Length: 386
Image (cartoon, rainbow, N blue to C red):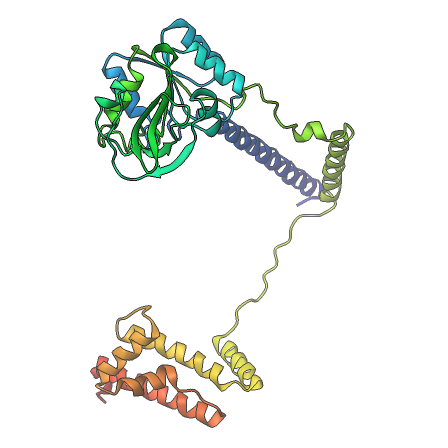
């Protein structure tokens, strides 16, 4: 091959390498974009009205729709407020953490009744007059209140219970609290209950859970199920890393990256083509065994050496007895049963006896070999024929 052909081949390999690097960067960019897209997908978690999993609430939504109730799912504040203004609708809301107090009260005023599905202490204080969490109840409880929606639903297992402080409505007394508390009446009514124990898909068919959900949410024939987003409140978000760093940091990082890429390209072009070299790597098993033996002898550790011999013997005995990777005790017991020998004696040979001198190590190794030979004769008697 001429020098010109060799130079062309090298340039071709260099071009292919740069093409591979570019393809890798494109694939990495696509992966980052896909991960970012996943982060913007609607939540399908706890009390999500479109989630069909055990902790979602799609079942109660479908039951409401089957009964003629229109259910609108809102995943931002603007959609929720618009839906409430267009219809005489009950607002069902779960996680209110992204919302500030003013936003929560604005939603209450726009709705024709509010059902707090996962009430927080702040929600109870603002909308239910000062009620608070009072623990959890595992047993079933009867309504024992004058609220028709609860009285006609029957008993439920309420989950979290709340104190009746400041509440006009208190149903399902259990564990020192109430499974449902509320305040007001008609379009101004606000009720709170632990929907994670009552209205999720896996709990809806229990007791009077489905009836309670239908009665509370289906009163006006319209429901707005609001899943708040992180930016729905007026709370000021924490500054990002880019906002905290000085303005000169980003240009400096870009300059360093450009310098690193330039240096990599400069150094990469100085190397010639790769040269394959076959190196001998085969080591005989006898050399490995002799090397270990010398190490054990130098260490004057007969117990360690015997342990190695025992491991090999147990592995071979396990194969002979068809026990595979059984534990050492089971293999020793099987060998004793095969030879009709004392269990303690066979365990001593294979497991328990400890040598203290080289002479005792040799004797122990002889006993191991004799034990293996005896088991082999019982398993394969044809080996005994001359």
